[in-house]
Length: 70
Image (tube, rainbow, N blue to C red; front, side):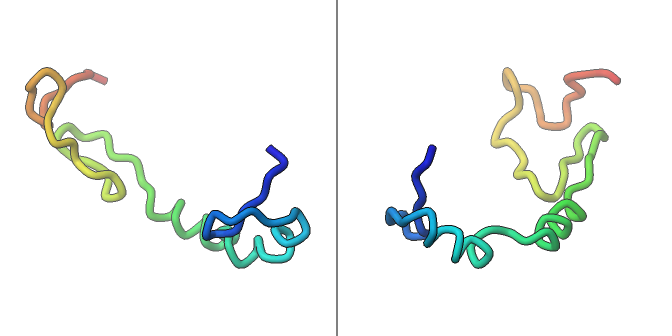
């Protein structure tokens, strides 16, 4: 902690970071937009559109396998 870097990974001062952080970090609007895209999916065999499906299921089971019964 206490170290600051630009988006290229170069060390910068705390003052330089404070001057540029609004350009580099997400805004409240950015965060709200991303949050609006992220909806939970709990149906077996379905996956949220912001998550990649696994390459393989647990212990060779298919992705659609109902691992947990709710």
